[in-house]
Length: 153
Image (cartoon, rainbow, N blue to C red; front, top):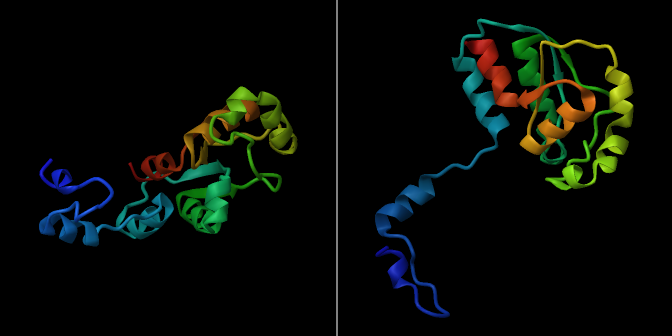
């Protein structure tokens, strides 16, 4: 409270104490995939999965980490499937829940591509995408970090 008490109307003074400024300058904000990539060499892979499905999200693709995520998955599973038709799932945050016809249209080709295939796990990178993908593709999607947990337990 003392730090915020120094703020005055229209003028922002230093809101952090000098100790907290030091902590703040040491912070590293990293994407989960980058963190996993750095962590993975220190983990023992004891339960390699056979066949997994990966659906990169729009955000992961836009920041250029899709290939990194697939590379990580290849270290944790024998076969990694990324559907050729995997693009935007149509979730758009919660918009896909409000407009399911967008999701149906977005995933139409992927549904056909994956029909009849079986996986030891399906993984994606955002909870709303995971819910949308699970509902439409009929495969239970989990957060990508679950793949790491399952392969290293």
